[in-house]
Length: 168
Image (tube, rainbow, N blue to C red; front, side, top):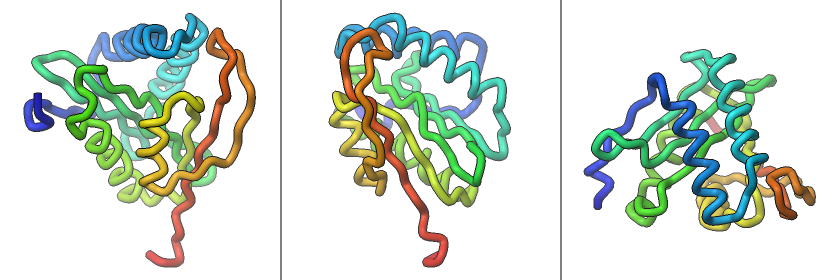
């Protein structure tokens, strides 16, 4: 499997919201033992994304292989010219081929193109490979809080990126 075997799209189709929710729930249960609370959180976030969707400000990227979604990431507008990165997920068998880097680059290129001045994301302390990728793009840990929101004890973390508009 190579990155060149995948296709990328930015338009949602019927079934995508449910499928992204389902895969988040199934993968995070398998890998991190998250409960239904996490799947519900993702479903709520996707509903919010879709209900407030503005194609000039928001975007989702879906990586597909042979018609199956194998990776996702989204960028959603927030007040104050900020953006939130969401829904980052890679199917386990598609990790290690550069897919995460490709999705992150697409997302950050859109962020820059739209002139956002800050971005943030929420994750958990367990997501070390994703955190390393976020940090390579300049995201910095700004908040931590103990949580049982996903059906088990963990630490939720907020990462922020502030764009230096003076240097552009």
